[in-house]
Length: 415
Ligand code: NIG
Ligand code: FE
Image (tube, rainbow, N blue to C red):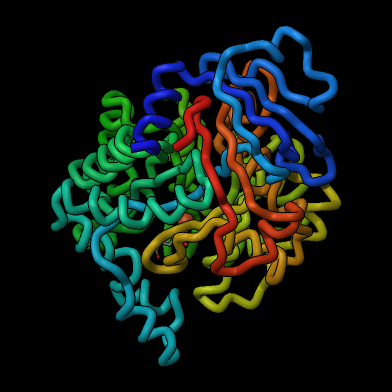
């Protein structure tokens, strides 16, 4: 068929092509754009990009496929820099309890919450976890997500944490998306360690993290520093172990209370601190000094019906890079739309549409420590970009439940 032929053409041509008649936001910043733009791709890499009239003659005569973009917008591939995509079961029953009046914290204290997903994840086999996560991954990919961070943390024992991270890696092998794995062994206290949190942290630091790291399964390390998670001292032990192994750290910080987590994270040069509803100005000053990103998670704010807003105006004032992510997870953010998070970051957190878009491109790249390679279209970088059938980039944050992504190009190959 014609479609098959087209596909062969691109793969045989080893990812060469010229995309013309586009409007490009190279840094995902709607304030810095190129109109009547062209991208020339050679061997999967951007060889030239700019305004069509300025294209050097050497590219004009190339015998490679040409694509008329018809005025569509092109941005870097989107990055979902905080997810818990791999897990067993759902928490729809817990949602009902919360609607009947129970709080997220109360449910967690009564042995539900994260621990109920741990039970379901321990009993699920690897293939089932893969299939279920793949079903949730696909709608994200359809929205132009090309890089996704996936955390462990619903195993809380070596075997199940390994199983989750292996599934995360496999997703990146089977789907056109780059997966960044984060070990979140310190997510909750497993039931078999009740009353022995320090012993569990010993297990995390002495066994789980070094083992999984040696197996190549860990790109970064995260901790849930919270009253219903782990204390400051326990969080620090995990960070110290990660640092010894040369792994970057991040933190679920200041979501339900302020334990001082963000300042600890800053001391360990964390890539990001995430959630931040209870972040203070002193914390923000520490983040500024360490170059740590703030990751905002409007899906979780919305779904647990939080009323305290993260301190957006202060983050803006101190010019802390703000990323936005789905935080996809079964308990606090069962969403499969990153674009909806742009919309909610604007409506709930009052970000501008421009800030929201940078939050899932350049700033999300920073939150993953990948600003040198991701979140920006430039000559010499991979030809990973998304085409949007919109009149203005503000539409990426404007719609809710509508997907204007018209094509995804990865390494110069139309997906
Ligand atoms: O990002 N806060 C901790 N971790 C997740 C929720 C996990 C869960 O409830 O299953 C979060 O909100
Ligand atoms: Fe999370």
